[in-house]
Image (cartoon, rainbow, N blue to C red):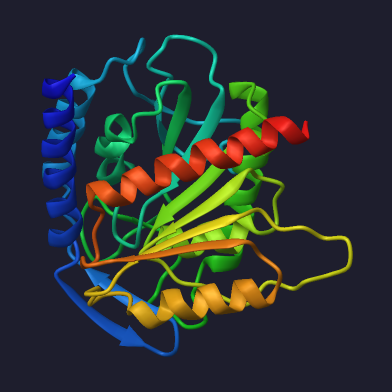
Length: 281
């Protein structure tokens, strides 16, 4: 167990370095637009291979797609480590200029052996570096591609139950940076178990209507984040709370990255919201 814990910490540290090195230069455009330049793809590939070797999963992570190819997203699937049918589903969205391999090394460190974890690639190629993907173009006018990407992600999420056997009510949607923004954008419209926004931001305030309920949200942000300002997380918390969303908010002394304490908090949140979902159904 101590060796497994040490390996997990080493992978978190290495993967966190990849996240930091993949965000070398940032400029802010407009109110909520952040431009990421640089993406370390070879390093994340090597990290993913190391992660796969150290994982106790019954099956190796696989690249997959679902349904109509015009609507499907390519993704890495990490099956439950206990070899049984998944008790829940966790979907992790990467940031602007990243890809599924950037976040996949964190799967074992989440220590949720009964969950299936999916890491989808965003639909658009990143035009400013090889191997990267984006949910929409931060440099384009009016967040070019956001509307189509939002619909594609929504359709893909709604199709997952047919292939995984896990309903949306036991699915947690999470994301880092631009992926965190997409998590809030799309997730607040779906009956998922919960949402996790890591170093992200909010596109727009959700509309509160009579009889409508929102999934609970976990927002985590670094006080030293030089890419997405801390104020973006605070504004998201305030806007969501004002709309009636149950928000758990936590700041850490870190930059634009993921540290072990963040994964510990995310793990607890996932377990809690899925327990609630099971009791409701």
